[in-house]
Amino acid sequence: MMIKQIFPARACDIHGKTKTNKCMQCNVRLIAFCGILDDSDIHQLERISKDRIISRNKTVFMQGEQTSNFYNIKRGSLKIYKLSSDGRKQIVGFLFPGDFVGMSPEENYSYNAETLEETTLCTFSRMVLENFFVQHPHVERKILNIVNHELSVAQDQIFLLGKYTAKERLLQFFLNLSKQRNKLGWVDNPLRLSMSRSDIANYLGLTIETISRAISELKTERLIRMIGTQNIFLQDKDAIHKLLISEKI
Image (tube, rainbow, N blue to C red; front, side):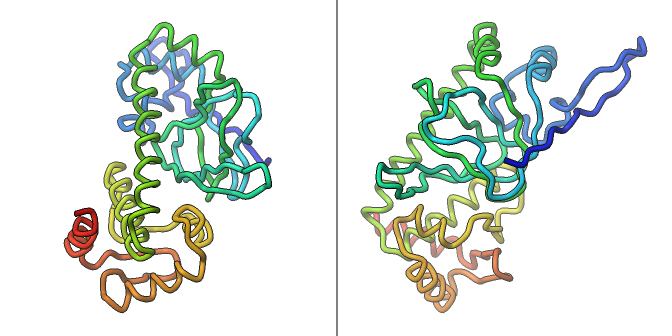
């Protein structure tokens, strides 16, 4: 796995000593689990974290490996997936800046994590971070809330696969990505797709051919428009919302 470590930026205090400030300058601090910490606690967290850049299509950790580290995404994106006993892959989610990854109720990772693009991860030793939780239980509670949210998203995914048509699954997926980008303070339309059509098809329980056909139909219906090969513009969000709501009734 190609990983290179980033050394945090340093500044001098009034006594001439150097201090790190990467956490204070982090673009996702306010939406990540560390956003509830005050400045003094942030400096403690900074001392136990390391930034790493991992190149595209590289494994961060594998299902079944001992849980040694936890990660917070600062830049880029990941896909998480499970492997069945016969080797089949099922993508269970896509993660973006601000998302926390690696926590498991067991001593081993319960899924695989792989980068979709060059990604910067804030990395914590599991043992060290758990000791930090002892001193800051409210931080652990927030992370547990994040994990519970992920379970809720997974349950929604099951509903989506059973209830919606292929086009509707794809539209809901696009809306979810738009919502995620809005949470980050980014432009939420058009959407840049860091994942491949193959990954989208796997996640939505469809074939690549069905995804391509659904995109063509949605373009014909003027609900979406392609900008290049990786960007989707949602032309009528209100119409999309109404379509999806009508299917739930």
